Length: 77
Length: 77
Image (cartoon, each protein chain N blue to C red):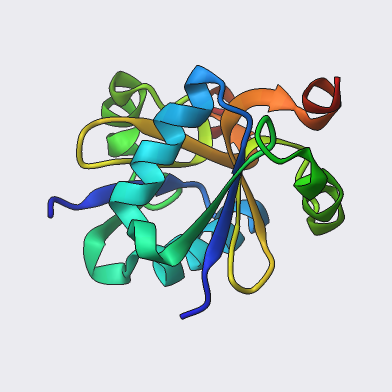
């Protein structure tokens, strides 16, 4: 199985969702991207359709926005 | 692992998310509840904190609202 990508920005809602998703899917199946640590990944996420964080992009390219931590506009600051 | 519960109402966004979640977590790990087929489960979902569908309630009781198909108010009609 290809990996999913979990995008987040370190907000409390992001961190909570990260724990839940890791528990559900398994850490080995997810690449975690923290925009606060690597803002160079922002364009790739926006191209994939990520509108807010936390969000999970599945192996087939679907975007699952999970709860709502912050908009991408806020992330870009 | 206890099962997660995926609540939905048959909307296109719900069905798309259902496929993604089944692919990610495995159908054997999820109970699927369709409010259109069983509205008696609505109070239980609201008590768990479900505000909109589709939503996944994890084995530890956290609610993950995934994208946005419909509010619970709309589901209750």
